[in-house]
Image (cartoon, rainbow, N blue to C red; front, side, top):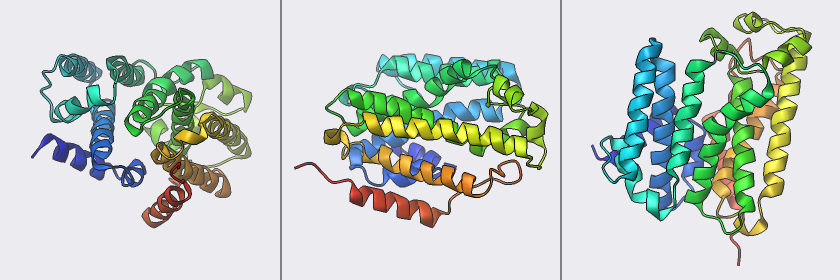
Amino acid sequence: MSPDEYCQQKAARSGSSFYYAFRFLDPQRRRAIIALYAFCREVDDVVDECREPAVAHAKLDWWREEIGLLFEGRPRHPITQALAPHVETFDLSREYFEEIIDGMQMDLDYDAYPDFATLSLYCYRAASVVGLLSARIFGFSDRRTLKYAHDLGMALQLTNILRDVHEDAMRGRVYIPLDELERFGVKAEDFRVNITRDAHRELFSFQAARARDYYVKADAHLPAEDRYAQRTGLIMAAIYRALLEEIERDGFRVLEHRVHLTPLRKLWIAWRTARSTKKPR
């Protein structure tokens, strides 16, 4: 199995909405973004699948070393081997890969976040940095596009947090800021129970509004001349905004069941968004 095939399988197995957006890229950019996505999945799996914190720490340290080897031109893992041809082509920063690992490290160091300032750092490392790397792979001419990529990463991560609040609680993690739980009269242990009270709906509505604000800010930052190049990100934004709307339409019952979009609906949103994003003349 080649490094690219390894990454392809890793991405396909995840069933993520990101995979629908990747279809609209040219072959080189598609290989690069799939390798980046496979890296993100691999380090995220370290935290999700390792029961022993010491083992998880050791594995993240191994990945830090592997990123160093990637930028020295000596990658060992299939994912870093797949990334290697794209590092110089797309000017991918070593610092950003290390930030992603730092984000996974926060999952080992925190089981809850005291306030949004602390959560923002996690979201930056876990998602906005991925957005910044992705923006370089997709291509841009105006540096305002990097602000778009940052805010879109925040929006996507906040949507994920809302969708997965029950699942995360069952793993012993709470990503909604604790001071906001207190403000709305909600306890962290409530998230482990399949019951939705008015206080939960009010708290989740507040989280949804924050995510929506980031989508709006991201779109405002994106210059017209870069919209076509960044259409993969726009597809992701459209899919995740539809997911956020579905959560709201369902009455914020994310503690009772996982809200999701069907594959056909995601494919339709991807096609519609790509078709409506015109190539500049």
